[in-house]
Length: 159
Image (cartoon, helix red, strand yellow):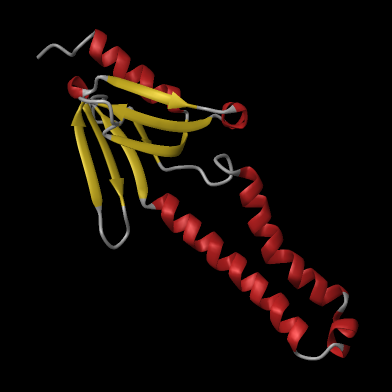
């Protein structure tokens, strides 16, 4: 593989860095009911069958949320190779956007305070018109995408 074949950017949205409080909250939802059942098993047993069932249902809900989130992030991929920008989304039905870097009019990176701390952001790619061609949130190191496109537009590769 030559340097031209290597992607300049190839990543999926981050889970923890994109939504740290939500990520921690899901893990608390998974483990807190189990810990409560283990620590207070005698007290919970005296309450009957309903409380343990509800605690285990909360754990199950947390696991479902975490798995859904994981699958959603793993099946969104932004890749820049040479002069092409590729965005692929979906598990069962796929959506694929492919753009020439030369078609890109603007790349906007949106980051709030916590996004800047965790080095993630929302990337919007504009070609023509006022609406972005696509927006993808939670991408690690979004400035690298903007810098690559800017460099490519300022110094197009010679054929």
